[in-house]
Amino acid sequence: MLTFKESCIGVMKLSKPPVNSLNLEYLTEFNIAIEKLENDKSCRGVIITSALPKIFSAGLDILEMYQPNTDRLRQFWTQVQQLWINLYGSQVATVAAINGHAPAGGCLVSLSCDYRIMAPNYTIGLNETQLGIVAPFWFSDTITNTIGFRKAERALQLGYMFTTDEAKACGLIDKIVPPDQIMAVAHEEMKKMFAVPDFARQITKNQCRKQFIDKLHAKRDADTDNFVNFITKDSIQKAMGKYLESLKKRKSG
Ligand SMILES: CCCCC/C=C\C/C=C\C/C=C/C(=O)SCCNC(=O)CCNC(=O)[C@H](O)C(C)(C)COP(=O)(O)OP(=O)(O)OC[C@H]1O[C@@H](n2cnc3c(N)ncnc32)[C@H](O)[C@@H]1OP(=O)(O)O
Image 1 (cartoon, rainbow, N blue to C red):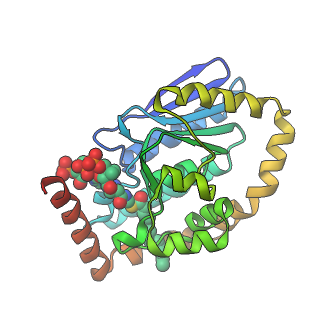
Image 2 (tube, rainbow, N blue to C red):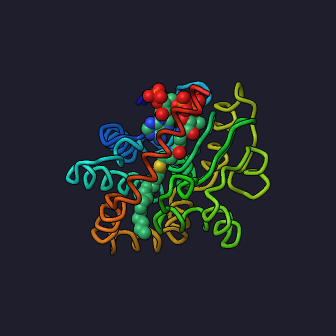
């Protein structure tokens, strides 16, 4: 993770080649970095983007979920939950500068921010069902809160990956921006949020999001149990194995 501060704005650049997949170690690093910025009194905003060309993040590292060690799988999921809690509940203003594809966990990271700008000709969405897995309730809450129930339900069922244009049309992202302008526009959008007194923006954000974060807190252990039980089922392991194969075939084909 490349993290630096430009005045009162923290910039986090995901930099885990080849595709910024989020494994246990990287999620832990991500959480430490965001917590550090959150606790830095001089930091009012965070921009999350990718240091890689064409990929914002490929989402959770599928290899963490395929033929897993159960203890590690539990730690992995705890870090995924923590990342969402940190980002969705963040007191600083957050902008996702989506400069590449953003499937599943990559989409969730961006949906957890306050504002999303995206470069053209990429795809974004919660494609879990395409892998034969199910987005947990808090992924589903987050997309529903962004695009509304009907569109979210349809997209979740299909595991639909939106083009940048489609994402803009349904409100999954807020603005389409050429890649060379994405950081400049992220700073402009940040300034608009800074024009509102921090405490008023923060209390408003809490009013909108706290109930959803509290819901995960209340069910956190059960959510981890569900995840581990679900992922370790033979049928789910088979489906994930097939998906990994299809990724490799697509590459060679
Ligand atoms: C009822 C109770 C419910 C409880 C909850 C249960 C389950 C929910 C659990 C989890 C939710 C899951 C969230 C996720 O995020 S799952 C991850 C989904 N991600 C994807 O599907 C992305 C797949 N990847 C791609 O589409 C493409 O790779 C790309 C990102 C568009 C990039 O394409 P490109 O052509 O540039 O690269 P390659 O495809 O050649 O990939 C390079 C290399 O990376 C490997 N790879 C890609 N993505 C991942 C990944 N997410 N994890 C691990 N590895 C990945 C790919 O296989 C290649 O590897 P190789 O060894 O062949 O070089």
